[in-house]
Image (cartoon, rainbow, N blue to C red; front, side, top):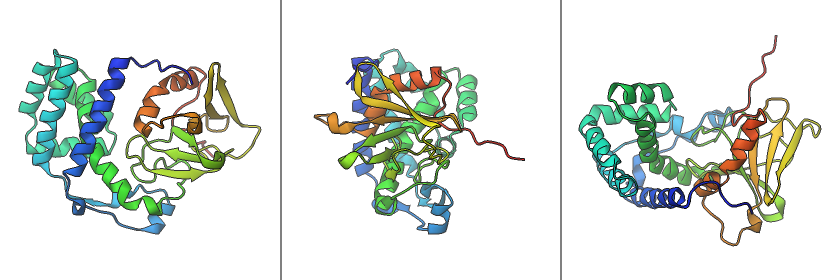
Length: 269
């Protein structure tokens, strides 16, 4: 298994964030999330979270901002002042807006917020996404038994995140894992997880020298790619989020070769 290109310090930060998210999730009232078990919508590729009733506790959200601020400042002391300024900006209405825009993957909103308030562009969306994930993960836990397969091209059936990570599990079965909400579902081994292409000629694998546990499945039809990791070779199986992070070199290789984490939909006349 190839050594991760991600620094040890950043890996440790991410592990601490994951532990914090686990703590946050346990503080949530399980009844704050009420999934709508609409099978027709799920079969059409509508993410579960798009139809679920979720009661966000804004007071908890603001407390979590304190928690994540303390953690980030421990690793990067220069962020302490930035986090103090962001806490002053986050009233109840702004917090609600952050949640809505994180749900919608609205990069433009967060970039504008950062520019207007003179903070580094990555910070607002990173914070909003980090704080949203306990809700997404609790939703996934509630519906996991119903999530066997996804709809190609629709992303994660729970949160809509574009597919990019698969694991080979018992018997060599290909199981897609979402690093965002931690949902998982099955897919055929030789199938593009973006467009559903099953043509052996146009669904191929890129191998990485020195990394026997990893491949990149690529599709010439939609130009999408999926990282495929044989976690049967791991002594200790990492979380999906850490596995995704530690295989980021595969994303670089795929993208350098012209493939994308979300396949393109071909236009038909």
